[in-house]
Length: 298
Image: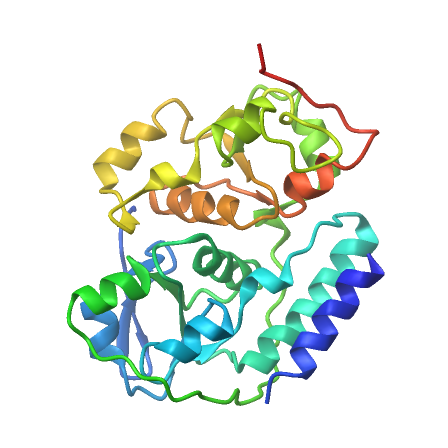
């Protein structure tokens, strides 16, 4: 995966629930990491705080058109990674720390990621920081669409990154590699959660060398987590995921680890303790001829 590593270096170098416990972030009070979603009114009250870093995860063209005041921009869709070999994970850790340093994330920052809706890019940002043991993170529920609907101001002024030396340590307990997923197929206590569309799951839509899904995986489309751009109520999400035991190890995956990140956020908010996102997802699994697949097409 040399190409992936080079992509990380190029982009980084070229950019100048359960019980909620309140914690103090500078002068900002925000719930602990179990509360991974923030509302537009809550974020509006935080604007201007020196320990707040708001990150627009959309494309630069969308950011330049309008964004939340003070937000910096990084198109997280450009930083996918599908190599979960030992060497691949080592490079992912190295290059992602460069990226997070260039964005300006430090231990004191409370970071809010957003895109147009409660989407996959913002959720990927949340997962990234949790993976690097940075619990002061949330995503904006409803994204920029909800922000605008609330009548809050936007701006077109761009904001440069203020470089930091990010020092977060990887937490292997929330990441799954292909080897762990392969062993999980035979474990009754592990649920593989396919967050892709039904057509991708059953093999009607082919986006890799193989069609179909990882054997034993259940399919809950990440889009079903949302309603009118924002996350559904806790009660409705609980109903959606009721067949997945709370004490199970759950491994969500998708095509590239973005939609799965959205499902990861939902599961953590619902109180699932043991959730690992399969970073490589179908982009890795479906392109490896040595790994098993299942088809559901009739």
